[in-house]
Image: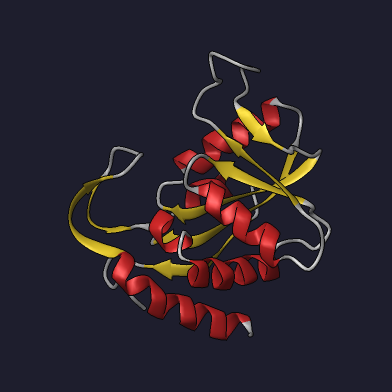
Length: 176
């Protein structure tokens, strides 16, 4: 399946996961429609297709992917399962646990990583994950999202990171 066919498949499959109404995003911004990226990625067919698309965008020599909990967890799993080469994953909690090993980052962090997420709107969650990963001593070489919501990657690119997405859903026309 080519990236064009994959994108077309994802655009068709996402329609039931777009909800209209009044929603508050993690950035605090209010929006009139919402992409339920978590539910989208927790469908085996969608996860397989999105995983394939993300693997095709991922630097081939990057063997470690992770992102913000909880949205990135199924995205990381999809990439790991669809990758033709071994890859490891991790996720970043909003704050370190106050029990057990006191981790903020769970999983397998490598010296160079890609940060991934289901949806990028403001970029705040992704930038917070990047900050935590860099504080832990890793280098973020690439940032990917399944869905870019109109202007999501602007803040990430402005911070100096290479950013790409599978499908952009614009505010004026949420389903391409």
